[in-house]
Structures are given as C-alpha cells and as structure tokens.
Image (cartoon, rainbow, N blue to C red):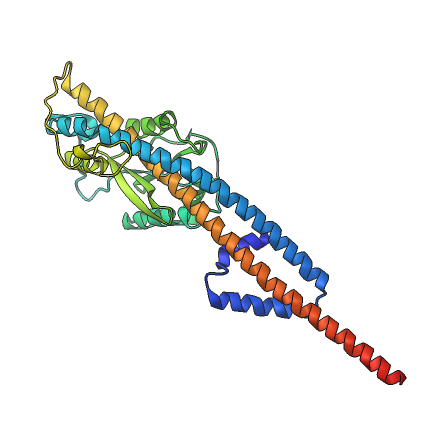
Length: 365
C-alpha cells in the first residue's frame, strides 16, 4: 500500500522527469544491495499491481451500473417534460412557500443551506478534491471565515441532525458522504446533518430523508436558499463540479430544468420524432391548484437531488476506475525499471566474481 500511495501521489508514469529521478534513486539505492532485496521489491510491486487491477475491474463494473441508472432517470425525466412544461405556466400565480424568494434588507446576509455530495472512500482520483475545492471557493465568496481551530469532533453517524438553526456565519452544510463531512468539520464549518450510509445503487427511497430535511428547513424559514454541490458526469474521463440552487424554485429555474431534462436525439427509448417539438396540452386539474403545484415542487426537488446523487455516483466510479488504471500502468512501468536495476546488479555481481576468479588464478600461476 506504500507503493500504491507513492504512485497515486507522485503520478509516476505521467511525468518523465519524475520517472527518470525514480530510476536514478533506485539505481543508487540498490547499487550496493543484493539481488534478493531487489527481487523482494519487484514481488511487492507485482502484488500491488494485482490489487489495483482488481479495483479497476470492480470500479468499471460499478460505473457501468451507475451510468445505466443515470441514463434511466434521465429517460423518466424526459417523458415527464411535456407535463411539467404545460403546468409550469401556472407557477407565477402560485404562492407556495417553495416558490417564495426571500430578500434580505439592510445588508443582512441570507442564510444558506448547502448540500455537499462526496464519497465515503478515497482512491478515486481528484473526484472529492474538485467538489470540495468548489465548495471552499463558494464559502470564500460568501465571506465565510474558514478557521480550522473551530473544528468540531468528527461523528460519522448516518443522518445525524445536530442542529436545526443556521450558524452565525450564514452557511450550514448537509454532508452526503464521509469525505465532505471530514473536510468541512476540519475547516470549522457548521455541519447540521450527515448522510453517510447510501448504497452503491442509490434508490429514490434513500433520497426521501435528504429532500424532506432540506424542504422542511426551508419551509420553517431557517434558510433563505438551498444549494447542492455535486459532480456532473460528462464522460468516463471528464467530470465537472457544480453548485446549483434547488430552493426556492423559480419559474426561470424550473424552465431551465425542464429544458435540461428534455429528451435528445439518439437516447434509448426516446422517439426521434418527439424531439425538438413542444406539445401544448390543456390539463383538467381537479382539486386545489396550490396543493397540486406544491406537491409538484416537492417532487421536482426530490428528483433533482436524486439526479445529482446519480451523477455524483457515476463520476465517483469513473474517477476510481481511471485512477486505478493509471496506478496499474504505473506499477507495470515500475516493475520494468526495477527489473532493469535487478539485471544491472546481477550483471555487476557476475562481472565482479569473474574478476575475482581471474585475479586468483593469476596469483596462483
């Protein structure tokens, strides 16, 4: 594992100058060492390569399932596009609390609840570092004093609510994943809730506690905005950290969401002729309009969080797969370099022994 950490930290194999310095250091270290020590080192690197290769295959399998779940949710959201488009025009006449934008006067900062989505484990490249860095940049833009001295004790409990009131600095964190929880607590940021026991195959049922907590806190006027920091899955080699506002739900934000969820040509199961055209359907609504719009807003919020979790999960698995692949390739290069050092050492030993034998024979004769 020491070799694995060295490979991941120093990016061996990516930078030629580091590779050359590594070879020189190995040659100096093993110049006076015996071949037995070098063989033991080669065996250790081979064992590390087996571990990283196995982790790469596991991550590839998990990534395939995560991407399939992400695409499946996009397909569902695409088919609900027509319904959301037709009902969205009634939002401006609605006075539901989730659509109410609260303005602070007199220079008072708005209380913000930020949902930070990270992983529970490491060895996934820069996945956690990117989204945490994005969060820190947002906190600095809000003039938040990041003081590690105020760090609280770490408690890795699933869905542990520590406080329902906003902190004095104006920004509270709901961490989804242990890595984000540890990072925010070390910086002294107030973490009001932690959700760390989500499964690899995230279901909509697991999202209900997160969405219920955020919606309840917003309706109770504890916070003026609810944001989500997550990672957009673009491809297996490209993931982009992003911070998006989910509450309050404005008509503009909802229309942008609908446009983003609209089906695109070529998606599996989406008729090509239905893409690019908007249907104007007049729905007959029974019951209270405000109740319907409020229920729709809650479902949209829950669906957004669910989609962000799926995007982050796919990004995590793809980052881990790429990181383990790089580690496996770097281990192979280390094995080749150590083999070269071993052959040189063995050749030097053979040459020295031949010289000693020749010198002995010359002295006898």
